[in-house]
Structures are given as C-alpha cells and as structure tokens.
Length: 357
Image 1: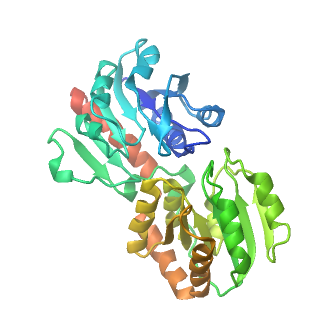
Image 2 (image 1 turned 45 degrees about the vertical axis):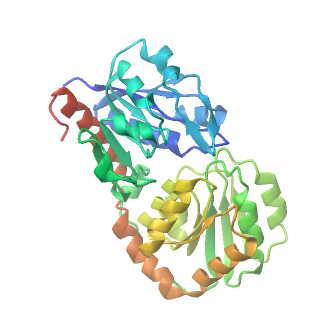
C-alpha cells in the first residue's frame, strides 16, 4: 500500500509556544518510521518554531500566517495555497486550535480528508474527525454525524520514551527536589514568579529550572536564584523531561503536553498555567481526578497563592503518593502512535482504502 500523503499545518513561536510543532514532529516520526505516510509540515511563526520543525521526519514548508489572537494561533487556509498546489493530499491535519467557520471546508481543495486537533471553533463541524487532547468537545451531541470525535489523555502525543513504564515511586518527606518547567517559550515569565514564590516555601532542598527553546527570561532567572536558600540549577533546554520528572519529588508545570508527561511518570505536580484557556481547563480536569494540583492562570495567581499551594503539596506526602498512582492510570505514554494511526485510519475509511493495523 502506498504511503498516505499528509499535509500538517501547525504553528510555533515565542509568543504562542512550541507544543503544536512538537506534536507534529512526533507524529511525523511515527508516520515516516512505519511507512504510513509522507508528511509536509507547513508553518509560519518565527525561528523558534522553524528550528523545532527541522527535527521532523517531513518536508518543511514556510507559509504565510495570521497574527495570533489571545495567545492562540489563527488559521488562514489561503496560506496553504503555495504548498498544496504542488500536490493533492490524502489527509490534512489542522493543528491550530479554534478554527473558524469556512476555514476547514476550504482545506478540502487541498486534501480529500481533514482532521482537526484540539478544536472547539465553529469550523470543527466541517471536519471529518476531531481529536482533542488539550481540550474537550463542548457539545458532542450537536456535532454532525459525519464527524468522528476522539478525545482524552489516551491521545496525548508524548515523546516515544514515555511508552516505557516509569519505576515505582515512593514519596519521601521533605526536603524535596522540585522541577520547574513552564513551557517552551514562557512568554509570561512564570518561572520568575514561581522562583519568587518559592523563597518562603519550607521543605525545598533543590530546584531545577528548565527553560525551553524559546524562553526569554533566562538571564533574569539566573540573577534571581543567586541568593536562594536552596540549591538551584538552570537548564537552557533538554531533549526530554522524562528523567527529570522521574527524579523530582514535586514538579511545577504548565502546558498541556507537559501536564500529561508529569502524570505519565507519576510526578506529583502543581500546575501554574500560561494565560491560555485550555491550559487552566486541562489542569482542572486532572485536578478533579486527583492527579494534579493547580492555581489556574499563573498570571492571575498571586505569588502568595503559588507559594501556599506548593507548600501544601510538599507538606502532604500522602497526597503526593496518591498522585503518583493516579497519574499513570490516566496517561499510558502510547498516545503518539495511537493518534498517528487514528488520523491515518480516518483517511483510509473516508477513501475506501484498507485500514492500518
């Protein structure tokens, strides 16, 4: 069977973060490595997103884009014309959050099937399938019967290393090692706010800060932690957070995929979210299931609120032990391959081809 021709539209930059491009990179490795599909990754954004996209098993094309709105990318299908006019694709994946009416339908001139990811916009009703990981469908019963809906943490597109079970965790009393990782860009400077909050938190022995590829506050962070009472390390970027999450007693996290990574390895976590609605909603989803604590929007949360929440978590060993058990029961680390095959199978079902096993 010939590989599917896949057009993937994602966006990444310092302003909106890099998680969606990273998802494209991981899915492309599955499609290319298992001879499922040949991928063209289309993006605009800045050099941060472009540098990350260069790691994909895909042909990377720069296309025109629209200015982001409320911290989210905006999808303009006309930007695909320069890429899509060269080929006809079996499936287009639109990983641009909330699509507008008419935008998804317009993609059909370029691809036979259209799948959207984490989409609650009005345009989602025009798709063949919606796969939600970071958000949940607000009105499933009102979707057209022609739209397939798949959602939940089982579709979390994590790095391949998370498929291996993490070692059992036995949570210890303080002092604790704390990992702070607040997104690939952290344009809101939440790492600085968390560092300030931890100044008065008892029970911290060591803190590791991970600054993503697009982080802009690294120098300020170095200066702030120079006089801290706990040992501190700043890592400019790492290929995977898995080992750091396993080694930490407590993690302070933002971003949808990072929340899933923490749950997958059973890292007791406090979510301090970037000011994008789906991050706070996802953190609350995990919180209601006992897998994570949250202060919600980290920009709105005060330094005192962040410090108090972290102190409660550090001081409650049983709470941390419960999180260590609940998180892996929700996120199994197989979501990237599951999502890659789900997208491929939507395409082959709609075209009458044989499904991929």
